[in-house]
Image (cartoon, rainbow, N blue to C red; front, side, top):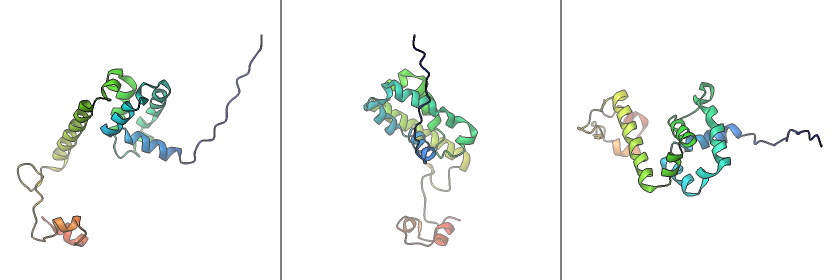
Length: 152
């Protein structure tokens, strides 16, 4: 009987591993990207699912503080834990549903944190506050002072 000693395999990891994993985990916040992964068969690949499970460390506060889109962690949990979610993610109608729900969630959060704004009933009416630079700000025709003074 041979006694095989398992040797640690040394793997050269990229020096920017943190940034790569941060970027990837945040891509999971995009329903279109999750749909893309499902369409390409990644969500049924056991090694990819192990990788997703490994990425769970981003939920720890010392890593989560770097996330711009923390809701990516919710999608990460669903991808790891729910076979039904992984299967449905490949459907265009489900992708569109996720996108719509995400938008409604952002809209609700924005309204509750920042109010509905001074515009019309929908809160999306960014009327010119007299400075004439609301549209110009998009076209870079105004200075920052002009943009900041609008609507105040």
